[in-house]
Image (tube, rainbow, N blue to C red; front, side, top):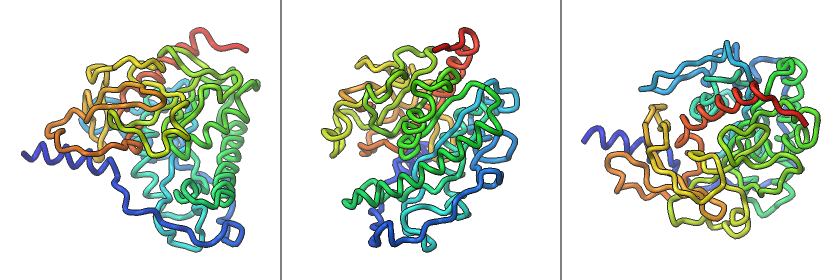
Length: 346
């Protein structure tokens, strides 16, 4: 019984039930803007390969290793929205990168559970940035929301340019992100890789948690094979037969990649193909979920854990990467090996 309760709690906590959306009442133009980050300061990076941070972590009950010191490729990881509640300072629309409490939250959630996926085969670079508040995606004041997102993306660009100048040294690059991070990741691909010289260094772009149309890029194509290089993938995870409220507007014609098959087919992938996910306490759980693409979204059956009949969650956005932790980890290693073996030339 204890085992059942622990695992159920693990999944329920992971599903992150909403406590209600914090509403920003003042306009963007009349709100204070946090100071611009200086990315020469190591403390403004959530993760660096030679810095002790949560991305170095290994899931409990696994025999994985942090191999950043010998990694042959880099990952530039853009984390999702962690700025969700009432701000603790005067900054309403965008987070302050010097907010130690928010940075701790970022470390112990997304950097731990998502960025660490890549520590087996990549050096991990992830900047703190003035992320837009969650409300920016829901406000009816679209211009205010866009202004907050543009400010956030400006930081991502600045950090990426610093990375290119000071850290990359011509090494192959993986772009990885989730949710708001994938909003910025999509823009980053268009600005720096799509039809650009840097595209030859692109191993793969993992962009889950955002609805992206298959024709979004001119020369970077969605992946249809697990060992392709210079391609991208995205998916949004929901319970089987569930469609989000904004499905018609955002998801119906978006690209959905099955992270157990690495293609956009509607083929069902059983849980046996899932090599392991992680839960709330960063514990490795084998064969956690199955997966099947369905008209722009990724459907799963209830996670395969004891007591699964109690689970009622239908939106699994926060677990887009956690559920497929090991499959992503293995896939990025495969693509890096492929890139090194054949290269990619445009």
